[in-house]
Image 1 (cartoon, one colour):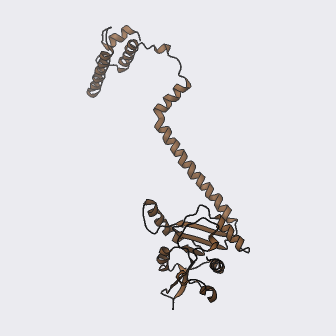
Image 2 (cartoon, helix red, strand yellow):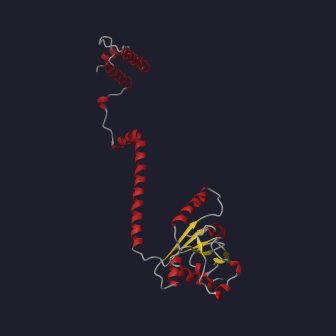
Image 3 (spheres, one colour):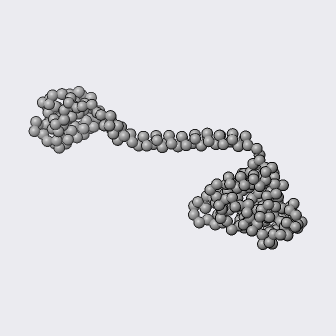
Length: 286
């Protein structure tokens, strides 16, 4: 569109200022909106906003010294900046979704691989669950130590579940909630727990009496380390827990804990191996 024609369509003078041009353009927009509301169909009275817009852009380009025909193609960087300016939130959202989906798929594949690996392993000869305020970075040294001490065993499993005696923060609250899941899902042969968890679990019928140790061996243990209890179905008090804190069987791992009370799970699969472990742990008490 020629400049003179644009002046006529916009109904402005050739000396129009940019601010005046903007005001005039808004004026035509309001006229156009009112015509739409009134549903004016007479072509002689109807404002052609396509022509108005073209005229506006022609005059504006002349005022700011911009020549559309002389514009150079955008560089790759300019195109990239334009893309991210207009689609940055879409891009960020897409990246986040990709990361979440990728992490989920990776976890699924990793879990399947681990399940196949465990399926090919022999059944554990002894499974131990530490439950309480215990921490250990790596349990494999203890597992290896047990295999060394008991050469007839093929595999041992040692697990740690942090369970605080009191809630000090949100992490402790989450740990206590997880403890309920552990009670329902984990099936170790023996628990190693603190006094707090012994008192908690003994009333849940989670243990069975420790029967099978010789009287001579038990007599060598300080009475403060022996935990007796009479359950509802017991006709007398029985030994349910033995504190083996300080035993050399734990020398292979770096773990700080005041109490390590051994208890036998109520339906342990490897009770005889629990007794073998206990005999060695008691003999190596400091």
